[in-house]
Image 1: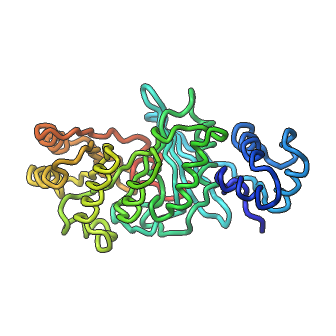
Image 2: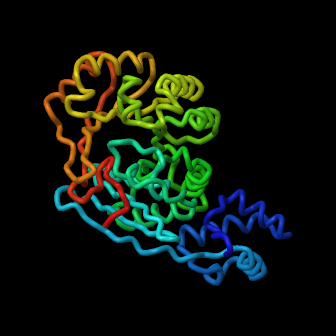
Image 3: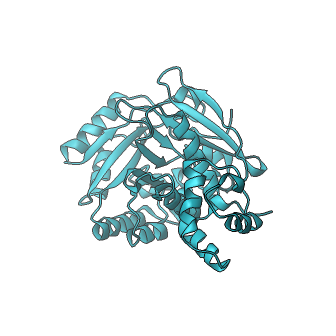
Length: 338
């Protein structure tokens, strides 16, 4: 089976054209057809020389993507899109309407191998990594569903992006390419549970994306019960990598802290978190735990008190208002089911 040409970045396509004895400059026009005009065959690319189209058609394909199944929240208008890619691999994306801008949440894997105990995707297990073309196909579908366009993009859907980093990185380059979707990297955020080598790679890269790290819980012992990857990448190592990232890039990082009622939301837990992230230029997103079965996390008094303790310590903190829980579209609820 031929590979999909949409799995190539523009620089990779330039290299391929050069290897075929063709001008590298044709890559830009091909990208415009693929991403601005939605070409479904090489025959659509009328302004590309016929010999270029023939050469690319002999090497690559343009596979049709499955139509997404859509569900819409009756509470807040959140839209969830379910894709079943090649082999039936499920992936879900979410379109989150906001007061000033709409965000899209994309999946990087069909399922997830991390096995976090509070996450429906983790219970699904890993089916396979998604290809760059399958990630960008989600973006295109979300863009069609977003009135007024998309203001931001987050890789916080199904899967651990840093365990499929090469494909996610290619998708980021394609999405931000000036001859492609031209979506600014500065409006993209990639979330990770803490894959240290990739955090270090990102710190040394030229990418302008934002980094979000799922702390989940500030104590190593409790985190090990909730996040199996804690055994491979201890929180202390993750935080050390984040400190290097912030120092080298002079950039802010987002921390995601899941609030479990009565488990990690006491004043002592808040103090532990404050001590853990001391000196890091960051913003903490507090996320009330959402039941994988469908009940959305509630903004309890304990959550509000926890937030106030962080604010009093000078930590920029946001208590997230979860959306789409009635259609299983909130954080931790994506499981590839309709």
